[in-house]
Length: 67
Image (cartoon, rainbow, N blue to C red; front, side, top):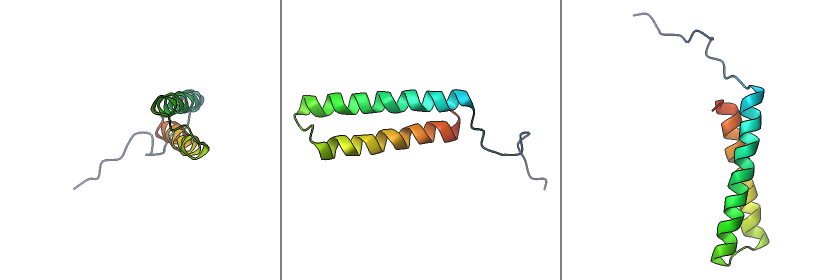
């Protein structure tokens, strides 16, 4: 039985557009995290720092997944 292989060799592409999109989504995630934290009255430095980590991970995922 023949194995299916992608035409591009199966490599993950990291284009400039996905980098810019990842950064934009990361900034938007941080803005939403901050707005929700302030709305709930829990905008402590620890909560905002965890929001920064989440925003960075989402941005990295968007860039690596080439979405």
